Image 1 (cartoon, rainbow, N blue to C red):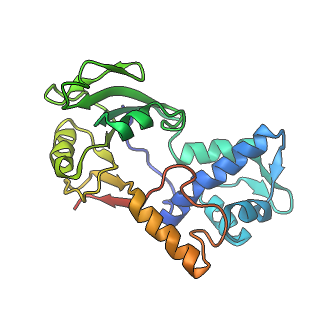
Image 2 (cartoon, rainbow, N blue to C red):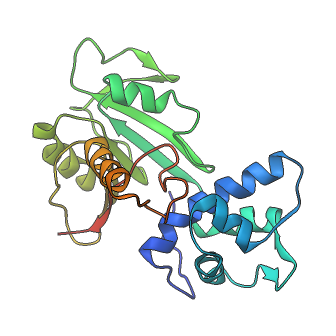
Image 3 (tube, rainbow, N blue to C red):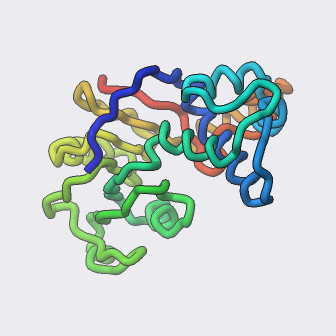
Length: 231
């Protein structure tokens, strides 16, 4: 399992939220065989100002030369390192209903370095079936040690599942349940609530604004409402 990494410079939450967008842009540039990109073009595609792009990327160290732009290979690698894509992570998913099944079968679910370690459910009709190459285990069984726990359970079950995951020494939770969790200090929780994201999107639509200033949505695939650490 991964261990915490020390950083020489802490990135702000807005910057962390934009880095995956910049990485998607860099990956798209690479796929087209293009080698360099400047902050103006990144900003246009991401919906932010060039100044914001330069400020965000400055937190990753020296990446480019003024006037020459960024090497997209280096940009892609450095963002990946900042987001932890160069490390190994074990992921367990609890709740293999429609959402859980769709997630684990999606090619975009796991980042580079992440490994799906185990699946859990309480439904006898689901336990023992094979999903995404894994036999679904009963939640009554001991939860395997992992780095990240993903909750795709009903709201009424979320707090108990979170408690079990924390007891299994899993201190990073991705919560798809519409329920605010109470967790010990030091446990990171990230909430994914599509209804909240839809409301935010409608606000921007009705007010002529955008999450990043009028460009692409910051989620690019999975909408997120933010993270809390402990309670």
